[in-house]
Structure formats: C-alpha cells, structure tokens
Length: 194
Image 1: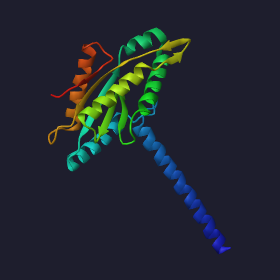
Image 2 (image 1 turned 120 degrees about the vertical axis):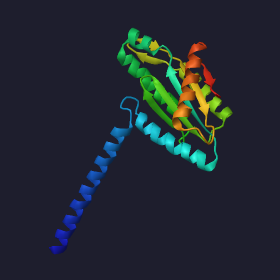
Image 3 (image 1 turned 120 degrees about the horizontal axis):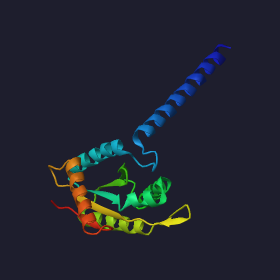
Image 4 (image 1 turned 45 degrees about the horizontal axis):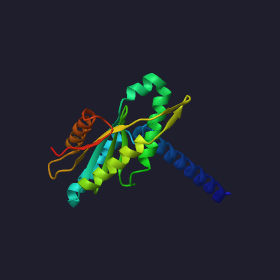
C-alpha cells in the first residue's frame, strides 16, 4: 500500500505539473498573440525582430523588414461594418501567412498595419516577397453580408545596414517607404534606401 500511495502522489504531482505548464503556455499565448488575426502582437514582434537583427549582425547576414497597410481600410469599416473589417484582417493574415517562410516574422503591428521581418534576405529577394504579398492580397475576395470585399495594400521595405541599424531604424525606413507607396497611388511596393 505504501508504494501505491507513492504512485498516487506521483500521479497527482505529474497532473499538477501538466496543468501548470498548460496554464503557462496559455498565458504566453495571451501575452504575445493578436486575438483577432492569431499573428504575433506588437510586443512579440519587437522581441523576435531584436533576436533576428542580433543574429544578422553577429553572422554578417542580410535582413529586410517590410511594413504594409491596408489601403482605404476606413472605407471598408464605414461601408460594410466592423465585422467586415475584422473578416478582411483575418483573411489578410491567413493569406500573408501562406506566403512567408517559417523563419520570417509576420505580425500585426496594430489596426490595419502589419510587419514582415525577413532574416537572411537580400534587397532583391525582399522586393520579390513584397511584390508577391501585394499581388496576393489584391486578389483576395472576402465575402461578408452579401458583399465581396477587395482590398489592396501599400508596402514599404528596408534592408538592414550594418552595423548601426537597430529595429527602430529599420522600421522607420520601412514606414517612410510605405507612406511613399501610398502617396504614389497605393497598391504598390516601395524600397527605402535612406
């Protein structure tokens, strides 16, 4: 009976450890995931980009970051409602996720703005990825309330410049390129070398 009691105590400890591990995993997901799109959130994005940039610096590798924003997203919400806007965000996240590598960092920055971090990616490869992303999103159709909603994105990207670039400098250049793409007529990709 003594060994049965020890076995019972061991089973209860194991079950408790599993329950705590599941709770820890759930808390981590809650803290790092955008609840709507299921993409990493802003906090997790910055952690991942910092790690990837440190690796690029350490290994003397290229890295690119793209920022993309849905064109005229306010119109989607105004004309079709916020449920339609949410459906567009979810479908965009699904579409973009299908186009990126496992090593890439795709996240929702906030609102209708997304970031794609591309480790070990040259300027030309980054341009091709951004164009593929822009094109795929422009072909999306989101059915909601009897309407078929189409959206486009403006994409800006920048490439890591060693050794001085940090995450904020990269994102700032990509952000300026994205706004340049919007000013140039939207639904386009623009690179910022400055």
